[in-house]
Image (cartoon, rainbow, N blue to C red; front, top):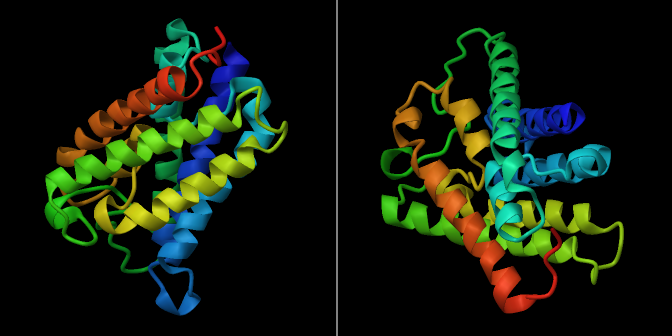
Length: 232
């Protein structure tokens, strides 16, 4: 179990450092040219690379909503849920601390939103609470369908990390303007601790909505798409 938790810690650390790091360190400089598309791709690449690197050890969740969805879908033991969540949140917090230490090395650095998630005034596009809640639920549900489908015994072996990484990229391309894209409570928690906005005050949404979405996606897969596919 220790190896599994270490893999989840490092995988989530990599996701936050790479994904949020691309937003804090690179997207802040338009002349470098990565923009929203670059940040979206960075998040997808973090999951793709870590799924191949440590997915065989822990399952490659790196996300409390994914762990919950896999439990609902019959692919993950409920007794391991809280330890996985703890490892994921700690990994995200450690990555955010490293990112803050790097970013603060630039004179005049101000954390601001620090790649955190939000709605209303904290939404990149000014979207309200209802829109933020809906997109986080729907996108996380879709993410779980992709995860469960690509890791199904029916799917071609060895390609799941590619499908999952591309799905996360797509999710970011759609939802960055709305919430700055969470679909991952651990990712939201880590950077919110260092933001100087009200990101912590809005953090509840980025736990509630992804967890609901993850459970919905798992139920859709388990009972509507592939009811005989769950494996204990």
